[in-house]
Image (cartoon, rainbow, N blue to C red; front, top):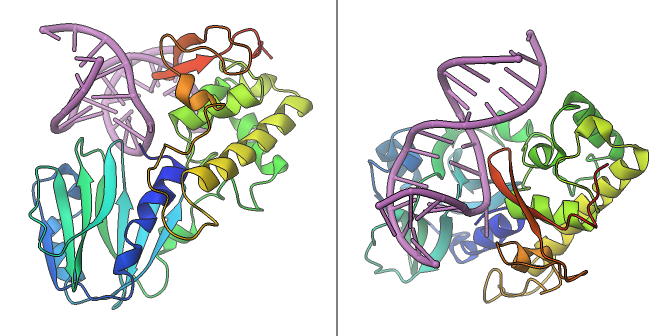
Length: 274
DNA sequence: CGAGATGTTCGGCT
DNA sequence: AAGCCGAACATCTC
């Protein structure tokens, strides 16, 4: 599920736990999400600490606790955060549960491409501060984008959009959404985009990220949106990118290609080759 | 039953 | 040498 707006949505699921102490920790020690550090060490570190804040950066999540304890979470392909009742019994894919007074914070991940890693630092960990600028950040400028595209001159733009170095938080459906809005063919080589095409790409990347954060992430609203994807407008490509899908603007059938190993849907007539 | 699913990493090749 | 591509990871659904 998770691209930047869904990551934001999941971050908010743990809001109920902010400012509260962790009274017990359940881990599923052999789960693959602990591949970068022992689960039991993470569990021991979190116990007795208070959850201070959650941060997101693209698809990365960083949970700040008291005592210089930080937990990095990545939702991978199927990770979800939820707040449940205090007496919750772990189910099959619940790999991490932080129990607090009044509730349990759950990390569930069926496919286990996600990640949970302990970090210790006074202030933000250095690797977090060194992450590339997010696409909604003022530092993510047209000049920054141009430098990135130049380094990948022979890469199809669809593949480049999935590169977290240049487009933190953009994943497969958002990449298709951006190219569709920008009227760019997904196989266009980065080096072949002219000034005008690069400008449109920059604008639509920002626009899709901002719109998705508002619709899915619930940014700027009180309370949580009831369902993650339900509020995505039908006019987006999002709902139509499947084998029998048609373009919500032209009504013509969508083309399907596998690019960089990922399913890609586009309207071949609108998205002409650059 | 094989294919594919909103992700990342690694080994091999150019 | 930088950068590309396919495979692998684990599980469920169509």
